[in-house]
Image (cartoon, rainbow, N blue to C red):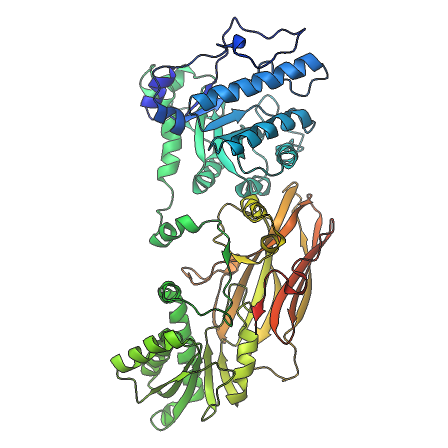
Length: 614
């Protein structure tokens, strides 16, 4: 099919930079990049600039590209031809060039040549990306039913990208084959920079009835997952059988039937929620974590958090249950429960507390403690606007400095961070415990942090681009998207309130062992995701840990604890991680390291890169 015609008919086309058939390099003499070699490629004059830039994936011809040949002339010729084809694609304004698949892991000269091109693109501030074509699975011709040893093409990709120093403009074009590897092996690719997936027409099947095309279910699921990562799907026109042409209804558009099948998978995706739309531009962006004792939150932060209806509903339910258990029905009209909200913000927890009192028919006397002087103004206005003056007292103070006029029956707080304790909840509630009755209730009553190893080259590249140790070992908040979760998460630290003993330290240490599943294959660990689960009161729970995540709980993004140098793990191996929560008289900080399968430095020693001020 002519390229211009294909693009006019909705296809993202994988086209070749076509070398003239009469052109061939001199095998006995190395080429030089001079203009006497041109023209060496054809151009389709029916294609516009916008189509070249937005729709065309240029296939770099593998002909004569033996870049790791032992023959010097062949090797030098191959380097010249590759650079010529990239130059031609750049001239046409093509933004995606698909490179041939490396021949195994012995591809150092190929990678050297590509790395030089990448550096040139960076210096020219070019937006072109080079897509390394990597096969996933096997074709029917290569498959042997008795053999379960599929070639792990991820190893080829990993070797090549490491030789190119994780360059951000080197990405992946997955060449999807008929026989796919195990599910865990496929999931590794969800953390890699997969820009395109190439579907050969041979992987489509034909139904016996109706002569219609379809994709196997595993391929459908894989494509749906890749769509979630905004991957472009490219249909490669290798061989279009007569049955497909009949299904398309036109021999002039033989790929239409294939395009229709892929299009149906796209249309069957779950609709994008408003929350997902609002988070689209924050995906995989490192954001500094909140340091509550140093910085006051701005109004926009409160605006975002107060939209989380699920969070405040859980608080309301927990407070209701605590009130019902603390005050029997026969004394509900005479006993006023003293409830202290620490970190009251602009009053959403105060409102949840009063709604709980109304729901249960209990009386409350509320102290709303908030240290941010700007927020106190908004809190005071809320109290007066709702005529809560006789029930709620606003206290403008740090809870650690406040002398409470009476002891609290219930202590409600909103100090939970993305890792549970990373916004000084233990230290803040320790200070508040001094004015809590001995049988008093803390909401939340406990919280546990979790850690999970990730493949996340995009996050690694962003931290690496800052070129300083501060960013390469600073824990950040991240809306995780283009990542691969390599194992289930594991518990790290647990804090309970009120404390059983005033002498109990808030320092913690934990050693974790993550076993890489045997059907995953090798993978790179770029860091760890941090989550939390919290018990508000007895059976009222919420959290962000993936296996038990509370639906539509939007206040907290996961944390990301990076590794300065990625660690390669292999199938069935143990990833041994050590994690510390350190405390001194001025600050709290985390330190972490890996000791197996290889050792990393201890990150963030003495809190040199990130910490929380006390």
